[in-house]
Length: 381
Image 1 (tube, rainbow, N blue to C red):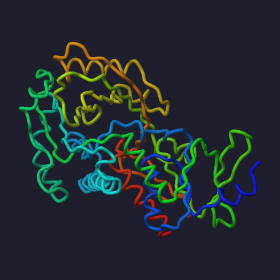
Image 2: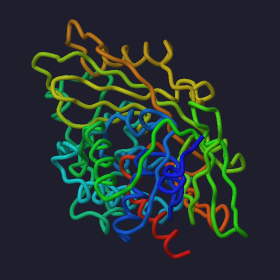
Image 3: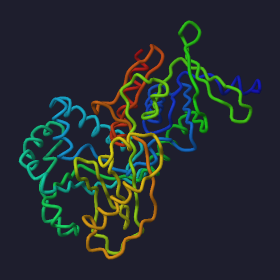
Image 4: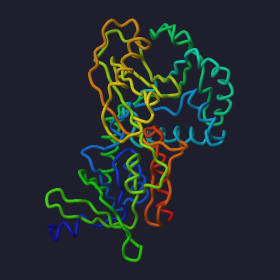
């Protein structure tokens, strides 16, 4: 049972956001930056954001060479350029909003490992640089084959190395903690352990009521707002099953510190399906969805032997082939959202309910930009 004070103080808002991941908090941040007096509530069902926002690998990237070439097979040139721009602009917005120190941003550059079968992609390197030249000051991709030996990769497996000076890395935990602090300091209310059961439009479709189950009393609590923004990414299908959203699990491991580690930067291979980076003297490695798309198109947050064993195999045979002993410190998984195309979904479901979801595994890069666009649509409507 709610008290008079709780009903007066905690239930009515201008805007409610479902999901406290990077998109949800970025939407709240953009709203409060535009209207400092707005009453904003963010509802999160977990202790931490449930999907991938606190579970990603911390890549400040916008697409590798082979990934962009793959995208061009499914999308037009303009669509690919727009997507890269949105990711790059999102990273700049994130850095400007929070500051590089707060998110531990380090622009060491990014590298793509090219195997024998991918060597033809190098013939398109100049073409892709020309395609992106209007977005970047300088060439995005260039060969750095001498680094193969410097990093200690297996030369039989890796035939070339493509460098991207614009890429960086962040500390995911610091980034999300800073973003949470940013919105809270500006008056945004964030409530955790609030799993939304349903929502409905009320008062002749002038407001939205969002229902959350009270874990202590089992009663439903209704929060009201003028507008609702749903930022639940891969978990959005429970509310809108007709949207083109497919969950995709990303599995990750991190090693114990490695003496004299040569790696420094972010690294991709196999069209971005595998990715690794240094975290201090540790190696963080993730990916492998392409080993079993059917099994990995899931919202179950757990690791599997099949993926983990393969990640360890790559670590020991290609990435650190000369390292005698590598100890794994921790393993985890996060849930991303994909669709037929990589473009995020930012659209009104009803005049008072907006959906901002499907980051395509690029939430760190594009999340701030999607939040800004969602905020703009809400304020204009």
